[in-house]
Length: 154
Image (cartoon, rainbow, N blue to C red; front, side, top):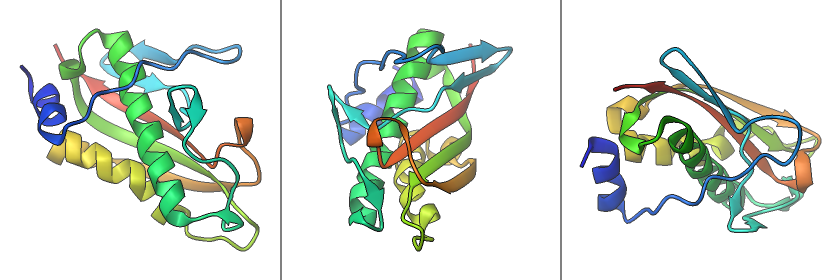
């Protein structure tokens, strides 16, 4: 058992099935030692964890939980492409998008939901560069979308 799978077990986390593409793209691309995931919505099974506008009906805490789920989905997608979760050596970058009301400015707090779970799982190798961007709309009215870049090992 590798470090990542051991941490998942310690944390009691079972990764969800990797979400499939819902439009004209692939869920991830591997180039050299990097795995780039497409944006992941906060699906838990067939349902979005939270829908709507953060700051207007969706709380920061609800959006953080959605960001966490989207990050877990990104790990699942990357794992499905590299073949084994323990080949994911490091989280390089997280891009987070928050469907925000015009007066909401706490996008970094929302995306912390993704950052916290990635750091819990990958520990020091989970510390990453990040963008937290507010937007007026996201696909399927999701409140967040997360994309990750992972370093792949052997």
